[in-house]
Image 1 (tube, helix red, strand yellow):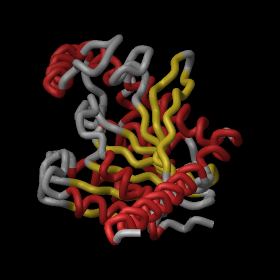
Image 2: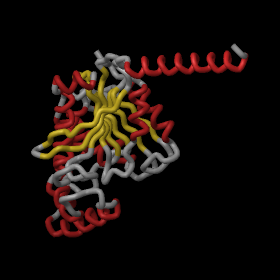
Image 3: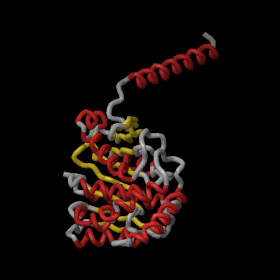
Length: 295
């Protein structure tokens, strides 16, 4: 056989071996790899669009429920990837009426939807599929997602911990005992602020409707009204130069005074989206999650 034919035969044999190995690898069962699972989460008659970043390994993995803000332009999915690499399942979803999820958007619905998302993870069949540890669920909310984390966390004492990133106290700027004659001015101010944030990704609501809802629930929605209920769990309070640090730090201090020594506060000199501090934000969140007592 000529040298050129020998070379051709060797190359063909090598190619065949590589191909067979690739086929063998692709057809072999791939268990416990990192994965992404999509789903629709039932909430009060609607189905919310959601997904879970499933961590590598058999698990069960502790779970972070990642809550976006209003309207949710910054969704923090870079943090989701980092948390998954650190061994956490991360559930991300869009509230009813937000970003294509069916139903009507409202702040009341947002809080209810967080509870529905937690219930979804706690369902034994879902937990098994997601390799999730449903006994260890952390709420991590940004902006209005922080508001949702405060409200849902205060209502559910079995939540392991609450993490806040520039949490927005939706009712915090409404004066207590607001005179009736001053309500129209307050409503107008709240409505204008919400309209500026952008309503395009939301359905079934309006700035005026959300402003009225905020005023109607101001007493129970103020962060300080929920401090005692949060004081039994670890709290992460991340703030920036966006004007929300004052009220967020007040909540952290109230939680600390009510008996929770596990309060972590970190400030970054950046904007509301942490645009130039993403790596630092991720490192802070990961360090906090690592410190949680998961037993």
